[in-house]
Structures are given as C-alpha cells and as structure tokens.
Image 1: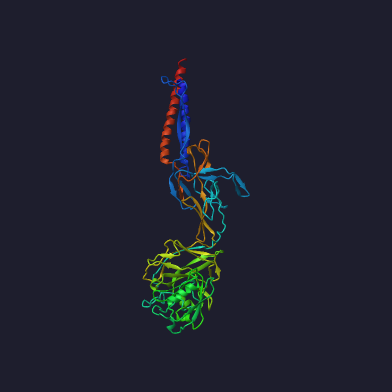
Image 2: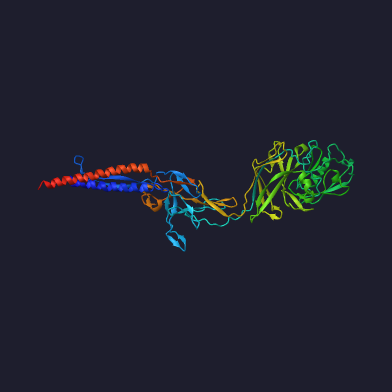
Length: 562
C-alpha cells in the first residue's frame, strides 16, 4: 500500500470525522426541538481485497448515519390541552398540505409520521404542530363513541353547536325509611304513615291498594254495622270487565265480601282480601284504574272505603293533604328535545305495610303542574307498585328495576318516554330514624345545546370537544403507527419521517402510552454531544498528523534522487 495508501486512509478519516462533526452539530442545535431524534455516526472500515492475514493492506473508513428513533426523549408536562406525547413505541400520523386553494389546505393523502406532539388549532379548526404538520386521526361516531373509520384523515373541528339531547333515562338510587315520618305520622296511631285513599275525591293510588280505616276483624255480620243493611250494594269498575255489583247480605263478613269481589271478576283484574288488622283491601292486578260507586246507603263509606275513581292523580285542592302524607324524593333538571330545562320533582308515599297485614308498598309521584288550581292535576302517580320484602330489599319491580313513564309533562313542557333506572340494589327500604327518603344518586342523560369552548387530547388518545353546557364529546381517536424497523425511516423536515421499503409499512395501533398535556423532548443530550465532540476533534487532529507525516516522508523519498 505504501505512503500513498496511508495518505488515502488518513484523508478518508478526515472526511469521516467531518461527517461525525456534522451529526454532532445537528444534534446540539436540536436539543430543544420537540420530538427530535439525534443521529449517531457509525464508522465502517473498508479493507482492500488484496489483504490477507499475513499481509494486511490498509483501507479507508466511511462514516454512516445511524438513527435513534427508538430512543425515548423525556416526557415533559404542558399547559396546552392539545399537546400530546407518546411514552413508548409509536408515531403520530400526520400530513403536510401540498398547497392551499382559496385559503383551504389541499392534501394528497400521503401519510407522514412524527413524535412531535405540539398540536394546536389553526384558524380552520385543524390540529397542526409547530412544524406545520396536520394531525390525522380516525373518525368517531358521536352517538355511540365507537371508531367509525379505518383510515386516518386530517382532524378538523367545527365550531357547530352541540345539539341538545332529550332526557330519556333518570338514574335514581335511594333508601326509603321503613316508617316514613310524614306530617300526618303519629307513633301511637297505627298506619298513620300511610297515604290513605279516604281523604281524596280523586284517589291518587293508581290501580293499587285501597285500604279502609274500619277494623272488620271482629264483625261477623256486616249488616250489624251502623249504616249497612241487608241488600245494600256497591259497584266496582276495573279493566275491561265492566262494572260488577257487590251485594251485602245478612250474615256476610268482610272475608265473604272479599271472596265475592274476586268471584265477580273471575279471578282477573281485581283481587280483594282482609288484612291482618281487619281492613278490606281491594287491588288491581294489572295496573288498571279502579272505580267504586255506592248503590244504596253508601256502604262503601261505611266499610271505610272511599267512593270515586282511582285516578293516580292529586288535584290542586288536595295537594296539601297529599304532601302531608308523603316524603320528598328529590328533584332533577331534565331537558326536552329543544334543550329547555324541565324541573322534575319527586315524592314518595307509602300505601301499605306489613304491619297492616299487607306488604310494604310505595308509590312514586312527580309534580305535573306547579301552578295548578282547583281540580287541575298537580301531582301524578308514575303507576307502579314498589313492593319491598321484610328485609328491606326491592321485590317488585324485579331487580334490576326500572320504571317507564309515558309522555311525562311538567308545567306544560312535554318529554318523551322517561325510564327511571334503579339498578340491581339502588332502591331499598331500610330502617332510618330520620323517616325520610335518603337520595344517594340522581342523574339523567340529557343536556341543553352547547357551544364549543375548548379541545383536548386525553390519555386514551381521544380528541375531545369541551362544550359550554358541561358536556364532552369524543371527536376523533388518534391513529398511532408502528414500524418493524423504526431506524430505517426516512427523516423529513420538522421532525417528521416517511416510510421506506427497509422500514416496512406502517401498522396502526397504539403500542406505547398516550400522555395528554405533555410533550416529548429531544433525545439529544448536550453533555453527551460535547463528549463526542472532543473525541471527534482529537480523531480529526490525529488524521491531519498522518497527512503531515506522509507528506514529510514523500519529501524525503523525492530528495533521495537529488
């Protein structure tokens, strides 16, 4: 090889160290660039083909670039809601516009990839990072929250108002005190905690228990009671069976009358029984309204039963009586289809109890007209019999319990069908010394119209719109790409990359962890780069010494012929 070969090797070393210096310079310049990946220098020895183990021929050195795309930079918190970082493997899918047409970005559909997550909304609603790359993501169905596309597209967020959502479900969980301490409740007066049908002209207990107040347990002949004579009659109307006439004959007791009522309806629509305390109780079996009317001598009143229609309504003039026999059940603002608020007030009334020889049964009411007067309906029964076991758990409706209210209306504002959902254990009747309904949860699924206030990217990788009505809406889901050979990606301006045949095609799917309100810093370290700078400088200086020495040796060789 000789002196000329040594000079060739030294000059290749100078070129290689110059390349290393270029990489170091680039790394130092980008120590503060978001998501920057430093470039290392890989030296390769090129050996002459004539070299053999016993006679080595000196070659040259080539400096190649070696990427560090898989080396994580520090994740640093940010105050910007749309800043995002990836902790681990993966790249944001982005695209740089090919141009602008009438001020609108024009895209070619070519994906690029970056770790630079300093995205912010531009004037057109696109999320663009500091290097001018537009974030691409998968579309999300606003109604279901599920991803509705397979190919990422540029995220563009509009300032459209979020339409109102009408309330359809109310989540309601509470404990009803086993003995409600209503205004009318007296500890020394049995059943004073119950809502009795007697004071009402329009009975509010829709198709439920109609329990009187006269103890008939020791009366063997009802005609011996004052006001009842042999042959007195009353009629019961319920369901589709039509009016049924019940006749009280000499020798009839309450149990015989109850049996006659059941027989009259053929075992359907209506049941009747005598409670442990001697009350005659008439029930509807299918939720239909019951109407009582007297035929002669008002025997229904003499038996402690109120005449009239079981309407499930509380009229305005009887609201005070109703309030005194019930307990507050909480209130919640629901929303109609236009987003108008509807204040739904609830009350609970206990209408039967195990201590009364029956079952612990409650009715739920909602306020229908806060301005009702006279015979206008103020409160309305939801039409369901809530029956509890002796241990305080709900039996009917069977858990998981829910009740539907058709066409709920409050102060003239109508809603569609509302479902009150109690869940599996959300409604109980345990002893409570306060004697009230303890509400543990009341919530609903509607909301008014909202204006977009802000946009954020969450740790789950969702682009979320935050609206003035307090609602959040998933707008898109980040498409995170991974590669089989990350370091084979082609570097582009602005910390972006492009797939190459050596890197393999992009694979969509989150591998690393998305970190919202954060940025990934450069993986260049100044101290490390300065250390490499010193080594590179020394290597370059040493190569120049080889050139100088080779030159002197050639001069000596030339001088030999002088």
